[in-house]
Image 1: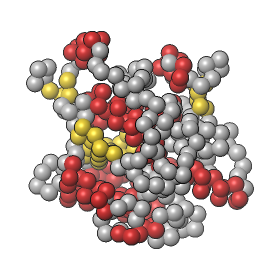
Image 2: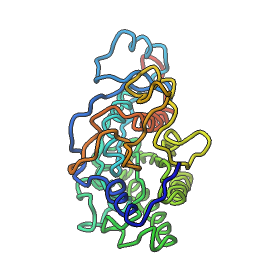
Image 3: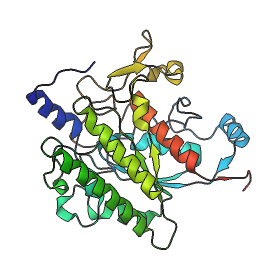
Image 4: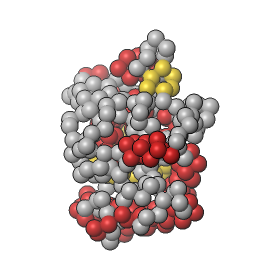
Length: 319
């Protein structure tokens, strides 16, 4: 299903899709919905942030209760569009305390201390600064992997021109960011870093595979976690084959707002001209959380939520 891309189309796609809609983190319109968290990756029906119903209370009483973790979510334009849905899922499922500070167009080095004016992230939202302020139990990192030199802190290193150097730098930044997050905890409990694996890339498919390997290696070396959100937006037959649409899940079939082509049993993950983002509303000049129900976003954030839920300690009822 991959299309042939000319150099001109590639450049335009990278600027529109990969760079996204640079802007300040945390800004944007109120999302169209804050879904309830799933009992599995398929999930429950989504709706406007409801108060707890008697049904929800009965279900919660029948399940082991988890301690309420504190979660910090950092990342690029994918995290920007995901942030409100993920927050809703984490709060519904775990009662999580949640803070997000994504910035579009960023990569790992933007969140490092010491990058200063060469970073798209201001000092107040650097990873270490937020860890010291928030004392999170989990720091979720979602980065596509800036590969085109958009952010100054990459020092002009791009995947296209210097592939080996790009991967070496990316791995070094992953180690450095982990170390800064852990050091920021001081003498307190260190947060666990959750590395979100990315979905397929139709332009440079091997790049995303290698970036995901860096995340997995770093998680293993430092006691972190891996959330394979990218698998949820990939064909079952090929983890790294990019597609615009996938068969509807059982949850999506039962909730037509998430099954965009119910007659064919298929749902859209991307807009036709945006191969990277999963929000089914066009990107805008000013970054924002996704304002419409979008199957790809719900699939990915459900997997991130499941990863945190599986890792969170349980406590007895009434504790």
